[in-house]
Image 1: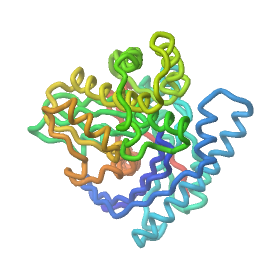
Image 2 (image 1 turned 90 degrees about the vertical axis):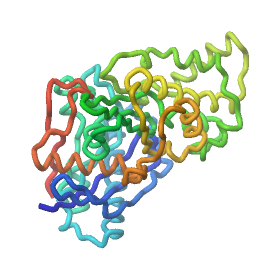
Image 3 (image 1 turned 45 degrees about the horizontal axis):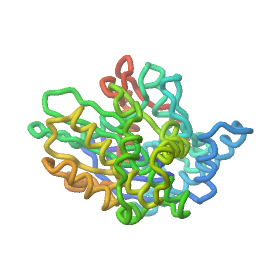
Image 4 (image 1 turned 30 degrees about the vertical axis):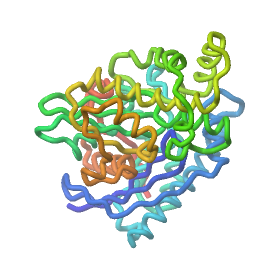
Length: 369
């Protein structure tokens, strides 16, 4: 039976809410439309503040959850208008929420967004809390998109990898006759955005232009790549809890003690190299037979990053997922719509070989309209 879901994704890049409207007819997915609601600067500031230990966290979290619900509701309403649909046409809204803390090693992951309030505002069933069941089963709770990548992008003959470059970059290996693996390679846009915000007040480095104006410092790059996360075995996932401005400041201080001052643009160029080299190293280590690499997420718009990836991986055919029929900016939100369909079917949404969970689990919790 044909059903329509709206997937909502707000990731670690903190740019806003992506909404995708997807019709499912069995295993076939058809995208009907999309919408985007940007985050106000105050919301970004509150999210970043809550990712550090501070005062009055419970109230601040609750208030931010309500603000996020309003933004999610606006994205749903915009998507309905774009597609000329009514609330009654939608089986469920599937809301990832905004990640505030991700600490699977401590047994929890926390995404904010008042799902009850969202259901009240939009008059549609809401499915949320998609990561905690996997964590409860001993998994990382991330990445969750590899199961969707397998369903949409796997080829019976060609070894492929799907690379999502958001705030954090994650890789899915789709190799014929071999189990799927997926993991976070490390920072995607996160440190690039944080550094340019700190130095110039800009939200992001458009097309990687500032990074391209600088020079990668190989000594600093070696210090950054020495982070133990990069050498860790699978399964693994990460976030702003590790790759923060504090993380960067500690390593810059170490560099400056040995080498002296470094130009801010050169730091940006080195951070871009960190993203590209950590991805290339991860492919060489965990997906060496890959022949095709398909990119999605906001990092696809960073021309300097894409050019460096192509230079580091000349043996691969590299393209955006648009080439496979799914626009790069819509992949993650579409993945959560797909996970909502899986929830409604009471079918597993995780891949234990990816997350390390004890087994297949139905992911999510229902907030009826």
